Image (tube, rainbow, N blue to C red; front, side, top):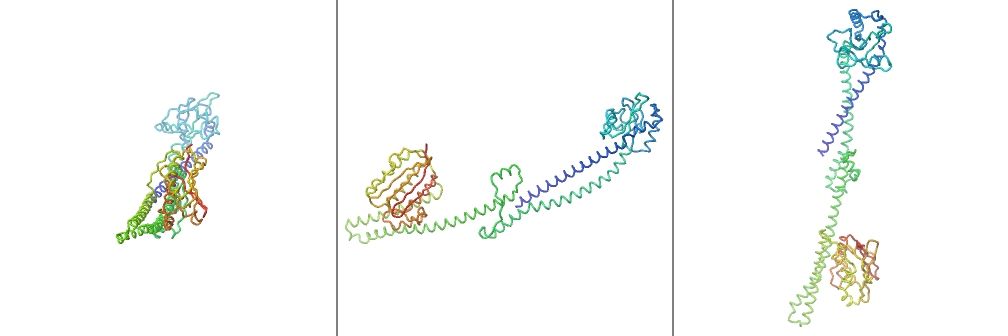
Length: 506
Protein backbone atom coordinates (compact mmCIF):
# COMPACT_ATOMS: atom_id res chain seq x y z
CA UNK A 1 0.00 0.00 0.00
CA UNK A 2 2.86 2.35 0.77
CA UNK A 3 4.33 1.94 -2.73
CA UNK A 4 1.00 2.68 -4.41
CA UNK A 5 0.36 5.75 -2.23
CA UNK A 6 3.82 7.13 -2.96
CA UNK A 7 3.40 6.47 -6.67
CA UNK A 8 0.09 8.30 -6.78
CA UNK A 9 1.44 11.19 -4.72
CA UNK A 10 4.50 11.62 -6.92
CA UNK A 11 2.56 11.50 -10.16
CA UNK A 12 -0.06 13.86 -8.80
CA UNK A 13 2.39 16.36 -7.36
CA UNK A 14 4.71 16.40 -10.38
CA UNK A 15 1.96 16.52 -13.01
CA UNK A 16 -0.08 19.25 -11.29
CA UNK A 17 2.97 21.36 -10.48
CA UNK A 18 4.33 21.17 -14.01
CA UNK A 19 0.91 21.82 -15.50
CA UNK A 20 0.31 24.90 -13.41
CA UNK A 21 3.81 26.20 -14.00
CA UNK A 22 3.37 25.78 -17.75
CA UNK A 23 -0.10 27.32 -17.72
CA UNK A 24 1.16 30.24 -15.63
CA UNK A 25 4.08 30.87 -17.96
CA UNK A 26 1.91 30.60 -21.08
CA UNK A 27 -0.72 32.88 -19.61
CA UNK A 28 1.85 35.47 -18.58
CA UNK A 29 3.62 35.29 -21.97
CA UNK A 30 0.34 35.54 -23.85
CA UNK A 31 -0.97 38.43 -21.77
CA UNK A 32 2.34 40.31 -22.00
CA UNK A 33 2.55 39.78 -25.75
CA UNK A 34 -1.03 40.87 -26.22
CA UNK A 35 -0.56 43.94 -24.04
CA UNK A 36 2.67 44.90 -25.81
CA UNK A 37 1.10 44.41 -29.23
CA UNK A 38 -1.88 46.54 -28.25
CA UNK A 39 0.46 49.19 -26.80
CA UNK A 40 2.57 49.33 -29.99
CA UNK A 41 -0.55 49.52 -32.14
CA UNK A 42 -2.09 52.29 -30.06
CA UNK A 43 1.10 54.36 -29.82
CA UNK A 44 1.89 54.08 -33.52
CA UNK A 45 -1.68 55.03 -34.45
CA UNK A 46 -1.52 57.94 -32.04
CA UNK A 47 1.76 59.30 -33.44
CA UNK A 48 1.50 58.13 -37.05
CA UNK A 49 1.22 61.69 -38.40
CA UNK A 50 3.89 63.15 -36.10
CA UNK A 51 6.65 63.10 -38.72
CA UNK A 52 4.36 64.54 -41.40
CA UNK A 53 3.34 67.47 -39.21
CA UNK A 54 6.93 68.18 -38.24
CA UNK A 55 8.00 68.09 -41.88
CA UNK A 56 5.25 70.48 -42.95
CA UNK A 57 5.42 72.88 -40.02
CA UNK A 58 9.21 73.22 -39.73
CA UNK A 59 10.77 75.89 -41.99
CA UNK A 60 14.04 73.97 -42.20
CA UNK A 61 12.28 70.98 -43.73
CA UNK A 62 9.32 72.62 -45.43
CA UNK A 63 11.44 74.02 -48.30
CA UNK A 64 13.44 70.83 -48.60
CA UNK A 65 16.66 72.42 -47.37
CA UNK A 66 18.44 70.94 -44.41
CA UNK A 67 21.05 72.58 -42.34
CA UNK A 68 22.74 69.91 -40.32
CA UNK A 69 23.65 71.97 -37.23
CA UNK A 70 20.24 73.63 -37.24
CA UNK A 71 18.47 70.29 -37.59
CA UNK A 72 20.54 68.84 -34.76
CA UNK A 73 19.48 71.69 -32.52
CA UNK A 74 15.87 71.24 -33.62
CA UNK A 75 15.92 67.53 -33.00
CA UNK A 76 17.56 68.05 -29.63
CA UNK A 77 14.88 70.55 -28.65
CA UNK A 78 12.10 68.25 -29.80
CA UNK A 79 13.61 65.34 -27.89
CA UNK A 80 13.70 67.42 -24.73
CA UNK A 81 10.03 68.28 -25.23
CA UNK A 82 9.19 64.68 -26.07
CA UNK A 83 11.72 62.30 -24.50
CA UNK A 84 9.76 59.33 -25.81
CA UNK A 85 10.85 60.15 -29.39
CA UNK A 86 14.10 60.01 -31.38
CA UNK A 87 14.43 62.04 -34.59
CA UNK A 88 16.42 61.12 -37.70
CA UNK A 89 16.71 62.64 -41.15
CA UNK A 90 17.38 60.13 -43.92
CA UNK A 91 18.40 60.68 -47.52
CA UNK A 92 16.29 59.06 -50.29
CA UNK A 93 18.35 55.84 -49.96
CA UNK A 94 17.85 55.52 -46.20
CA UNK A 95 21.27 56.82 -45.11
CA UNK A 96 21.18 58.62 -41.78
CA UNK A 97 22.21 62.27 -42.26
CA UNK A 98 21.17 63.97 -39.05
CA UNK A 99 19.86 62.72 -35.71
CA UNK A 100 18.98 63.80 -32.21
CA UNK A 101 21.07 61.22 -30.34
CA UNK A 102 24.69 61.31 -29.36
CA UNK A 103 27.03 60.02 -32.09
CA UNK A 104 28.42 57.18 -30.00
CA UNK A 105 24.91 55.76 -29.57
CA UNK A 106 24.26 55.27 -33.28
CA UNK A 107 25.04 51.73 -34.49
CA UNK A 108 23.64 51.96 -38.03
CA UNK A 109 24.59 54.13 -40.98
CA UNK A 110 21.34 53.52 -42.85
CA UNK A 111 17.76 52.37 -42.31
CA UNK A 112 15.72 49.93 -44.38
CA UNK A 113 13.14 51.92 -46.35
CA UNK A 114 10.70 49.02 -46.86
CA UNK A 115 8.84 49.47 -43.51
CA UNK A 116 8.78 53.25 -44.13
CA UNK A 117 7.13 52.72 -47.50
CA UNK A 118 4.62 50.28 -45.94
CA UNK A 119 3.64 52.81 -43.26
CA UNK A 120 3.28 55.65 -45.76
CA UNK A 121 1.26 53.51 -48.21
CA UNK A 122 -0.87 51.59 -45.65
CA UNK A 123 -0.99 53.45 -42.33
CA UNK A 124 -3.99 51.36 -41.15
CA UNK A 125 -1.88 48.15 -40.97
CA UNK A 126 -0.09 49.13 -37.77
CA UNK A 127 1.90 48.07 -35.91
CA UNK A 128 4.76 48.19 -38.42
CA UNK A 129 8.31 47.89 -37.10
CA UNK A 130 11.35 49.61 -38.54
CA UNK A 131 15.10 49.53 -37.88
CA UNK A 132 16.35 51.07 -34.63
CA UNK A 133 19.52 53.10 -35.44
CA UNK A 134 20.72 52.49 -31.87
CA UNK A 135 20.81 48.69 -32.39
CA UNK A 136 22.02 46.43 -35.17
CA UNK A 137 19.00 44.10 -35.10
CA UNK A 138 16.28 45.62 -32.94
CA UNK A 139 13.00 46.80 -34.45
CA UNK A 140 10.86 49.69 -33.14
CA UNK A 141 7.58 51.34 -34.02
CA UNK A 142 8.03 54.66 -35.76
CA UNK A 143 6.47 57.58 -37.60
CA UNK A 144 7.84 58.69 -40.96
CA UNK A 145 7.14 61.28 -43.64
CA UNK A 146 8.82 62.10 -46.97
CA UNK A 147 10.48 65.51 -47.40
CA UNK A 148 10.13 67.13 -50.83
CA UNK A 149 11.52 70.20 -52.52
CA UNK A 150 8.98 70.82 -55.15
CA UNK A 151 8.44 67.37 -56.62
CA UNK A 152 11.91 66.14 -55.85
CA UNK A 153 12.32 63.82 -52.87
CA UNK A 154 14.96 65.16 -50.50
CA UNK A 155 14.73 62.43 -47.87
CA UNK A 156 12.62 61.19 -44.95
CA UNK A 157 11.90 62.38 -41.45
CA UNK A 158 12.16 59.18 -39.38
CA UNK A 159 10.83 59.36 -35.79
CA UNK A 160 11.37 56.41 -33.45
CA UNK A 161 8.44 56.11 -30.98
CA UNK A 162 9.73 54.97 -27.58
CA UNK A 163 13.38 55.88 -27.76
CA UNK A 164 16.22 54.95 -25.46
CA UNK A 165 15.22 57.36 -22.67
CA UNK A 166 11.65 56.14 -22.87
CA UNK A 167 12.70 52.50 -22.90
CA UNK A 168 14.96 52.83 -19.86
CA UNK A 169 12.34 54.73 -17.86
CA UNK A 170 9.53 52.42 -18.98
CA UNK A 171 11.61 49.31 -18.26
CA UNK A 172 12.23 50.48 -14.68
CA UNK A 173 8.54 51.16 -14.10
CA UNK A 174 7.60 47.97 -15.88
CA UNK A 175 9.97 45.89 -13.74
CA UNK A 176 8.15 47.08 -10.62
CA UNK A 177 4.81 46.30 -12.26
CA UNK A 178 6.01 42.89 -13.43
CA UNK A 179 7.21 42.09 -9.92
CA UNK A 180 3.76 42.84 -8.58
CA UNK A 181 2.13 40.84 -11.39
CA UNK A 182 4.47 37.91 -10.78
CA UNK A 183 3.78 37.92 -7.07
CA UNK A 184 0.04 38.07 -7.66
CA UNK A 185 0.21 35.35 -10.28
CA UNK A 186 2.41 33.18 -8.08
CA UNK A 187 0.13 33.61 -5.06
CA UNK A 188 -3.00 32.85 -7.05
CA UNK A 189 -1.38 29.86 -8.71
CA UNK A 190 -0.20 28.44 -5.39
CA UNK A 191 -3.63 28.89 -3.85
CA UNK A 192 -5.34 27.30 -6.82
CA UNK A 193 -2.74 24.53 -6.86
CA UNK A 194 -3.30 23.84 -3.16
CA UNK A 195 -7.08 23.60 -3.61
CA UNK A 196 -6.70 21.36 -6.64
CA UNK A 197 -4.16 19.13 -4.90
CA UNK A 198 -6.45 18.71 -1.89
CA UNK A 199 -9.34 17.74 -4.14
CA UNK A 200 -7.25 15.36 -6.19
CA UNK A 201 -5.61 13.85 -3.10
CA UNK A 202 -9.04 13.18 -1.66
CA UNK A 203 -10.24 11.64 -4.92
CA UNK A 204 -7.16 9.46 -5.38
CA UNK A 205 -6.88 8.35 -1.76
CA UNK A 206 -10.57 7.51 -1.39
CA UNK A 207 -10.26 4.07 -3.06
CA UNK A 208 -7.09 3.44 -1.04
CA UNK A 209 -8.98 4.09 2.18
CA UNK A 210 -11.76 1.79 1.03
CA UNK A 211 -9.27 -0.92 0.20
CA UNK A 212 -7.47 -0.57 3.55
CA UNK A 213 -10.83 -0.74 5.33
CA UNK A 214 -11.71 -3.93 3.44
CA UNK A 215 -8.31 -5.51 4.18
CA UNK A 216 -8.56 -4.72 7.90
CA UNK A 217 -12.15 -6.00 8.03
CA UNK A 218 -11.38 -9.29 6.26
CA UNK A 219 -8.34 -9.78 8.46
CA UNK A 220 -10.40 -9.16 11.62
CA UNK A 221 -12.96 -11.69 10.35
CA UNK A 222 -10.19 -14.29 9.91
CA UNK A 223 -10.65 -14.09 6.12
CA UNK A 224 -14.26 -15.29 6.33
CA UNK A 225 -16.16 -13.33 3.71
CA UNK A 226 -19.55 -14.40 5.07
CA UNK A 227 -18.97 -12.33 8.23
CA UNK A 228 -18.45 -8.98 6.46
CA UNK A 229 -19.73 -7.05 3.46
CA UNK A 230 -16.92 -5.92 1.17
CA UNK A 231 -17.24 -2.82 -1.00
CA UNK A 232 -18.24 -3.31 -4.60
CA UNK A 233 -15.45 -2.55 -7.05
CA UNK A 234 -15.89 -2.17 -10.78
CA UNK A 235 -14.79 -5.28 -12.64
CA UNK A 236 -11.98 -4.92 -15.22
CA UNK A 237 -11.91 -6.91 -18.45
CA UNK A 238 -9.05 -7.68 -20.81
CA UNK A 239 -10.08 -4.67 -22.89
CA UNK A 240 -9.61 -2.51 -19.79
CA UNK A 241 -6.14 -4.00 -19.30
CA UNK A 242 -5.19 -3.17 -22.93
CA UNK A 243 -6.47 0.40 -22.47
CA UNK A 244 -4.51 0.66 -19.23
CA UNK A 245 -1.35 -0.39 -21.09
CA UNK A 246 -2.03 2.35 -23.65
CA UNK A 247 -2.32 4.91 -20.84
CA UNK A 248 -6.10 5.34 -20.61
CA UNK A 249 -7.73 6.98 -17.59
CA UNK A 250 -8.18 4.00 -15.31
CA UNK A 251 -7.71 3.88 -11.58
CA UNK A 252 -5.23 1.15 -10.79
CA UNK A 253 -6.33 1.23 -7.12
CA UNK A 254 -9.89 0.34 -8.11
CA UNK A 255 -8.51 -2.45 -10.25
CA UNK A 256 -6.48 -3.61 -7.27
CA UNK A 257 -9.63 -3.50 -5.14
CA UNK A 258 -11.57 -5.59 -7.66
CA UNK A 259 -8.74 -8.11 -7.77
CA UNK A 260 -8.62 -8.16 -3.97
CA UNK A 261 -12.34 -8.95 -3.74
CA UNK A 262 -11.93 -11.64 -6.40
CA UNK A 263 -8.98 -13.07 -4.46
CA UNK A 264 -11.00 -13.13 -1.22
CA UNK A 265 -13.88 -14.83 -3.02
CA UNK A 266 -11.50 -17.37 -4.51
CA UNK A 267 -9.91 -18.04 -1.13
CA UNK A 268 -13.31 -18.49 0.50
CA UNK A 269 -14.44 -20.71 -2.36
CA UNK A 270 -11.35 -22.85 -1.89
CA UNK A 271 -11.95 -22.97 1.88
CA UNK A 272 -15.51 -24.13 1.27
CA UNK A 273 -14.33 -26.66 -1.29
CA UNK A 274 -11.74 -27.98 1.16
CA UNK A 275 -14.39 -28.31 3.85
CA UNK A 276 -16.71 -30.05 1.40
CA UNK A 277 -13.97 -32.37 0.19
CA UNK A 278 -13.01 -33.16 3.77
CA UNK A 279 -16.61 -33.98 4.57
CA UNK A 280 -16.90 -36.20 1.49
CA UNK A 281 -13.60 -37.88 2.34
CA UNK A 282 -14.77 -38.72 5.85
CA UNK A 283 -18.10 -40.05 4.59
CA UNK A 284 -16.38 -42.02 1.84
CA UNK A 285 -13.94 -43.53 4.29
CA UNK A 286 -16.82 -44.46 6.56
CA UNK A 287 -18.67 -46.20 3.73
CA UNK A 288 -15.57 -47.86 2.31
CA UNK A 289 -14.49 -49.09 5.73
CA UNK A 290 -17.75 -50.99 5.93
CA UNK A 291 -17.21 -52.53 2.51
CA UNK A 292 -13.67 -53.42 3.48
CA UNK A 293 -14.77 -54.98 6.78
CA UNK A 294 -17.46 -57.11 5.13
CA UNK A 295 -15.16 -59.33 3.00
CA UNK A 296 -12.50 -59.22 5.71
CA UNK A 297 -14.98 -60.45 8.33
CA UNK A 298 -16.26 -63.21 6.04
CA UNK A 299 -12.73 -64.26 5.11
CA UNK A 300 -11.68 -64.24 8.76
CA UNK A 301 -14.68 -66.37 9.71
CA UNK A 302 -13.96 -69.06 7.16
CA UNK A 303 -10.22 -69.08 7.92
CA UNK A 304 -10.97 -69.42 11.66
CA UNK A 305 -13.39 -72.23 10.94
CA UNK A 306 -10.74 -74.01 8.91
CA UNK A 307 -8.23 -73.49 11.70
CA UNK A 308 -10.53 -74.73 14.49
CA UNK A 309 -12.41 -77.53 12.71
CA UNK A 310 -9.74 -78.58 10.23
CA UNK A 311 -9.69 -82.20 11.49
CA UNK A 312 -13.49 -82.43 11.54
CA UNK A 313 -13.99 -81.22 7.94
CA UNK A 314 -13.87 -83.48 4.97
CA UNK A 315 -11.99 -82.48 1.82
CA UNK A 316 -15.11 -81.19 0.08
CA UNK A 317 -16.12 -78.91 3.00
CA UNK A 318 -12.52 -77.70 3.40
CA UNK A 319 -12.34 -76.79 -0.32
CA UNK A 320 -15.70 -75.01 -0.09
CA UNK A 321 -14.47 -72.85 2.81
CA UNK A 322 -11.22 -72.11 0.97
CA UNK A 323 -13.11 -71.10 -2.21
CA UNK A 324 -15.39 -68.78 -0.21
CA UNK A 325 -12.39 -67.16 1.46
CA UNK A 326 -10.73 -66.69 -1.96
CA UNK A 327 -13.84 -65.00 -3.34
CA UNK A 328 -13.79 -62.53 -0.46
CA UNK A 329 -10.07 -61.93 -1.07
CA UNK A 330 -10.82 -61.18 -4.72
CA UNK A 331 -13.64 -58.86 -3.73
CA UNK A 332 -11.38 -57.08 -1.28
CA UNK A 333 -8.61 -56.77 -3.89
CA UNK A 334 -11.07 -55.39 -6.45
CA UNK A 335 -12.34 -52.80 -4.00
CA UNK A 336 -8.82 -51.71 -3.03
CA UNK A 337 -7.77 -51.49 -6.70
CA UNK A 338 -10.78 -49.32 -7.52
CA UNK A 339 -10.13 -47.08 -4.51
CA UNK A 340 -6.59 -46.47 -5.73
CA UNK A 341 -7.80 -45.91 -9.29
CA UNK A 342 -10.42 -43.38 -8.19
CA UNK A 343 -7.88 -41.58 -6.00
CA UNK A 344 -5.47 -41.44 -8.96
CA UNK A 345 -8.18 -39.93 -11.15
CA UNK A 346 -9.18 -37.39 -8.48
CA UNK A 347 -5.52 -36.38 -8.19
CA UNK A 348 -5.67 -34.88 -11.71
CA UNK A 349 -2.36 -36.33 -12.86
CA UNK A 350 -3.74 -38.77 -15.43
CA UNK A 351 -2.44 -38.30 -18.98
CA UNK A 352 -4.75 -38.62 -22.00
CA UNK A 353 -3.46 -40.14 -25.24
CA UNK A 354 -5.99 -39.36 -27.94
CA UNK A 355 -5.85 -41.08 -31.31
CA UNK A 356 -8.15 -41.85 -34.23
CA UNK A 357 -9.52 -45.42 -34.31
CA UNK A 358 -12.51 -47.41 -35.58
CA UNK A 359 -14.95 -47.50 -32.69
CA UNK A 360 -16.81 -50.54 -34.13
CA UNK A 361 -13.78 -52.80 -33.73
CA UNK A 362 -13.34 -51.75 -30.10
CA UNK A 363 -16.99 -52.38 -29.29
CA UNK A 364 -16.92 -55.85 -30.91
CA UNK A 365 -13.86 -56.76 -28.80
CA UNK A 366 -15.53 -55.57 -25.59
CA UNK A 367 -18.77 -57.47 -26.32
CA UNK A 368 -16.79 -60.60 -27.13
CA UNK A 369 -15.09 -60.31 -23.73
CA UNK A 370 -18.48 -60.46 -21.95
CA UNK A 371 -20.20 -62.91 -24.32
CA UNK A 372 -19.58 -65.98 -22.14
CA UNK A 373 -20.80 -64.30 -18.97
CA UNK A 374 -23.90 -63.00 -20.79
CA UNK A 375 -24.65 -66.51 -22.13
CA UNK A 376 -24.34 -67.98 -18.65
CA UNK A 377 -26.98 -65.53 -17.40
CA UNK A 378 -29.06 -66.06 -20.57
CA UNK A 379 -28.78 -62.35 -21.43
CA UNK A 380 -28.76 -61.12 -25.03
CA UNK A 381 -25.71 -58.80 -25.45
CA UNK A 382 -25.56 -57.13 -28.89
CA UNK A 383 -24.20 -54.13 -30.84
CA UNK A 384 -26.59 -51.82 -32.74
CA UNK A 385 -25.91 -51.39 -35.58
CA UNK A 386 -23.90 -54.57 -35.87
CA UNK A 387 -21.54 -53.11 -38.46
CA UNK A 388 -20.07 -49.67 -37.75
CA UNK A 389 -17.21 -48.04 -39.65
CA UNK A 390 -17.24 -44.76 -37.73
CA UNK A 391 -13.89 -43.32 -36.61
CA UNK A 392 -13.56 -41.37 -33.39
CA UNK A 393 -10.75 -39.35 -31.81
CA UNK A 394 -10.27 -40.36 -28.18
CA UNK A 395 -8.18 -42.36 -25.70
CA UNK A 396 -8.87 -45.99 -26.59
CA UNK A 397 -7.76 -47.42 -23.22
CA UNK A 398 -9.90 -45.06 -21.14
CA UNK A 399 -12.91 -45.54 -23.43
CA UNK A 400 -12.56 -49.31 -23.09
CA UNK A 401 -12.43 -48.92 -19.29
CA UNK A 402 -15.63 -46.87 -19.29
CA UNK A 403 -17.58 -49.29 -21.51
CA UNK A 404 -16.31 -52.27 -19.54
CA UNK A 405 -17.61 -50.75 -16.30
CA UNK A 406 -20.97 -49.91 -17.90
CA UNK A 407 -21.47 -53.41 -19.35
CA UNK A 408 -20.41 -55.05 -16.07
CA UNK A 409 -22.92 -52.85 -14.26
CA UNK A 410 -25.64 -53.75 -16.78
CA UNK A 411 -24.93 -57.51 -16.48
CA UNK A 412 -25.09 -57.26 -12.71
CA UNK A 413 -28.54 -55.63 -12.69
CA UNK A 414 -30.18 -57.35 -15.66
CA UNK A 415 -32.17 -60.54 -14.92
CA UNK A 416 -32.18 -63.71 -17.06
CA UNK A 417 -33.66 -63.46 -20.56
CA UNK A 418 -32.97 -59.72 -20.53
CA UNK A 419 -31.31 -57.58 -23.18
CA UNK A 420 -28.22 -55.35 -23.17
CA UNK A 421 -27.64 -53.28 -26.30
CA UNK A 422 -24.60 -51.14 -27.10
CA UNK A 423 -26.05 -48.49 -29.43
CA UNK A 424 -24.14 -46.12 -31.75
CA UNK A 425 -25.90 -42.88 -32.78
CA UNK A 426 -24.29 -40.26 -35.10
CA UNK A 427 -24.75 -36.61 -33.97
CA UNK A 428 -23.34 -34.19 -36.60
CA UNK A 429 -19.61 -34.06 -35.74
CA UNK A 430 -19.97 -36.33 -32.69
CA UNK A 431 -20.88 -39.94 -31.98
CA UNK A 432 -23.02 -41.08 -29.06
CA UNK A 433 -22.41 -44.49 -27.52
CA UNK A 434 -25.10 -45.87 -25.19
CA UNK A 435 -25.32 -49.00 -23.04
CA UNK A 436 -29.03 -49.80 -22.70
CA UNK A 437 -30.32 -52.65 -20.50
CA UNK A 438 -33.67 -54.07 -19.44
CA UNK A 439 -32.59 -54.48 -15.84
CA UNK A 440 -34.03 -53.39 -12.51
CA UNK A 441 -33.63 -49.67 -13.22
CA UNK A 442 -32.88 -46.85 -10.83
CA UNK A 443 -35.29 -44.83 -8.73
CA UNK A 444 -35.64 -41.21 -9.85
CA UNK A 445 -34.58 -39.86 -6.47
CA UNK A 446 -31.29 -41.80 -6.74
CA UNK A 447 -30.34 -40.66 -10.26
CA UNK A 448 -28.67 -37.50 -8.98
CA UNK A 449 -26.28 -39.60 -6.85
CA UNK A 450 -25.66 -42.53 -9.19
CA UNK A 451 -22.09 -41.41 -10.00
CA UNK A 452 -21.24 -40.58 -6.39
CA UNK A 453 -18.59 -42.91 -4.99
CA UNK A 454 -20.26 -42.80 -1.59
CA UNK A 455 -23.59 -43.84 -3.02
CA UNK A 456 -22.21 -46.74 -5.00
CA UNK A 457 -20.03 -47.90 -2.13
CA UNK A 458 -22.96 -48.05 0.28
CA UNK A 459 -25.21 -49.54 -2.37
CA UNK A 460 -22.84 -52.48 -2.77
CA UNK A 461 -23.58 -53.90 0.65
CA UNK A 462 -26.63 -55.84 -0.34
CA UNK A 463 -25.23 -57.30 -3.56
CA UNK A 464 -24.52 -60.99 -3.82
CA UNK A 465 -22.25 -60.49 -6.82
CA UNK A 466 -18.66 -59.51 -6.24
CA UNK A 467 -18.24 -55.87 -7.09
CA UNK A 468 -16.82 -52.88 -5.29
CA UNK A 469 -19.42 -50.34 -6.37
CA UNK A 470 -16.97 -47.68 -7.60
CA UNK A 471 -17.19 -48.49 -11.31
CA UNK A 472 -19.68 -45.73 -12.19
CA UNK A 473 -17.73 -43.12 -10.22
CA UNK A 474 -14.54 -44.12 -12.06
CA UNK A 475 -16.37 -44.05 -15.42
CA UNK A 476 -17.65 -40.55 -14.71
CA UNK A 477 -14.14 -39.23 -13.99
CA UNK A 478 -12.75 -40.94 -17.10
CA UNK A 479 -15.47 -39.43 -19.32
CA UNK A 480 -14.58 -35.96 -18.05
CA UNK A 481 -10.95 -36.59 -19.01
CA UNK A 482 -12.18 -37.39 -22.54
CA UNK A 483 -14.02 -34.04 -22.72
CA UNK A 484 -17.32 -35.90 -22.64
CA UNK A 485 -20.08 -36.31 -20.09
CA UNK A 486 -21.49 -39.61 -18.95
CA UNK A 487 -25.26 -39.30 -18.53
CA UNK A 488 -27.97 -41.69 -17.39
CA UNK A 489 -31.70 -42.13 -17.91
CA UNK A 490 -33.62 -44.84 -16.11
CA UNK A 491 -37.04 -46.02 -15.08
CA UNK A 492 -37.56 -48.30 -12.12
CA UNK A 493 -38.36 -51.84 -13.23
CA UNK A 494 -37.76 -51.15 -16.95
CA UNK A 495 -34.00 -50.60 -17.24
CA UNK A 496 -31.35 -47.97 -17.64
CA UNK A 497 -29.37 -46.23 -20.42
CA UNK A 498 -25.87 -44.80 -19.91
CA UNK A 499 -24.56 -42.55 -22.72
CA UNK A 500 -21.45 -40.54 -23.62
CA UNK A 501 -20.41 -38.57 -26.73
CA UNK A 502 -17.10 -38.65 -28.59
CA UNK A 503 -15.54 -36.46 -31.28
CA UNK A 504 -16.05 -38.07 -34.69
CA UNK A 505 -13.38 -38.02 -37.41
CA UNK A 506 -14.79 -37.31 -40.86
